[in-house]
Length: 147
Length: 64
Image 1 (cartoon, rainbow over the protein chains, first blue to last red):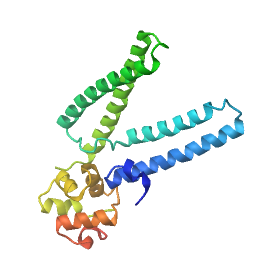
Image 2: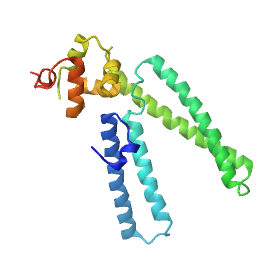
Image 3: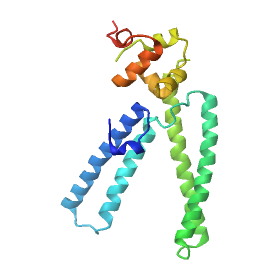
């Protein structure tokens, strides 16, 4: 299947198909959200696109995470533990970069403690989402493994 | 779709991961195909058949 979206999609055909499905479902929800805002509005003009994009991003991410297809090779306890360590490291790196960028962008508008708290929360959520995705992938792969 | 991919793979003495790597898929996808939970594209069916040295009929034709 040729589409300009290909550059953003995985090469594995199962993952690719599933991801396209999630994006299509998210797109339909986005249209519905826009349509609903027309019917029950008017809202503040900047609120509608932000909420619609939020619904799309949250839906696609949530479906991807619960599908258990992010960590396709994690099927044994040792793989799982190894990947969990990687996730901790990735979360910490993300937290540091996020806090650093946030500090540069928001400089002057927030006090340092606020920026650190936001950074910690972002790190925690990043870890929780990744860990949940790993757990789902591990459970799914364990049922499929045959070696 | 039920199939004989698992049997063919075992005959060839390959692991799911090894077959996956050879056909450009993931281990999870091979597991799903073997379990009958995912219907692969014709392109992937042919790649698997070639790797396992069997015909599409032998691997994917109706299993009684």
